[in-house]
Image (cartoon, rainbow, N blue to C red; front, side, top):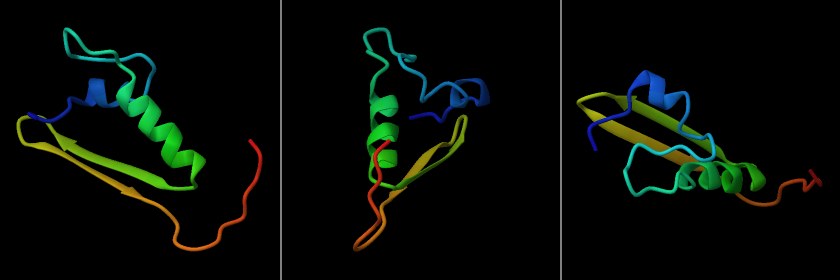
Length: 68
């Protein structure tokens, strides 16, 4: 893609938010919740006109599980 504007970047995890005419606005909102539920980290760097880089990481091995 062509990168994400600062204004859009503030909203990309809002449900529903989309910039596509036929988009649902669910994608990144769901992804973030799944990553958080598994104690992972989600990092996004974007520059309009250049592109976007997304990094998702999860802890390796046993982690303490909590409800909530």
